[in-house]
Length: 445
Image (cartoon, rainbow, N blue to C red; front, side, top):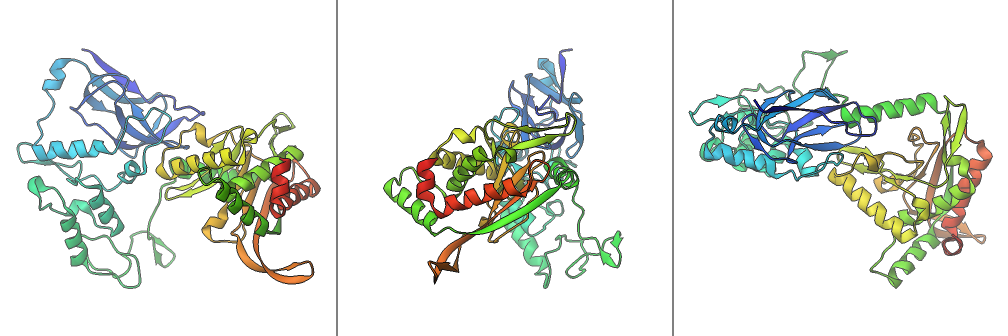
């Protein structure tokens, strides 16, 4: 026998386990060296794991949804040619389905996330696979198009209840649209799961598990990144005695300066967030106590020589904080490029584990969400986070006269163990002064 067992590898950053999100291969499939075989979710990112062996898959050790420890058996691959001959025969439709399932995933190295398209294909896939003898096995619904899957998910159509009208039983968009039409709209509430045999319970289907007198609408497992985020938020609030200070700032000159900069060089634009980042980095050089962390075991406050700047990015999959390493060495234009690159990667689900770790200070532009202010949670184990609200027109007194100005609220949340209110206020005031007089600030820094 030449069977080789592959265990879940060390994915870095001290991660000890991962959840099996999606198998990219099945028993009987032939795989090549470095071919992605499974998509897993860690506490940091979505990762495609490539195979170190080539051959035929004979064993899958964990089901989708299972949490596997690093070093635990993952898959067995046999490079014996006789094993390939023993793999099951598929109908043309089934083969087309398997190929389509794999089409959404590229050859991504360990440590890198998958695309948003790949991530969307995680749920609602178990149903049936047509075999050559006409029998069915409970594996996956025959759905070729990602558009059909998305349509079914958005309208809560249970694909396992549908019979496809296309050749080989493939479920088409018309099949899903018919199921939506047959179920009819649900007034006053979200659409219920559509099923030919499902009873009509109105806006909500009652659950056997009740909370007081109300039915339970859903239960969402705290796994992977969601669990890691919950633990980090809880730890931050539990361990860090935080304080918040804020100031309203006239950003009229900043908006004008940015326009002039970009008009002068439209091929290398600079965003407002990049300008804020540059001011923050200059402020941290003057107030390094905020660019630090508390080491309770050593009984020390550790201040850093240089800044790894975290940029909070809201995505469909939740909040991510990718890190610009050695941000203090970058110009405003270079910061803009890094911010664009990392936020795009976050929205595409393509951030690596390394992209999400090692930050020393975080900048959170919650103004893009349409809010003015927030008392943010410090990104543990950092010591501070600066929040930027939306820039809006407000009445403002200029030289004793009332005028309409572009105003933004800045809020600083800081660990009171690393400094008192004086240094924190001085840092915030410095950043505010840079916003109000950006030309002078950019020339000096």
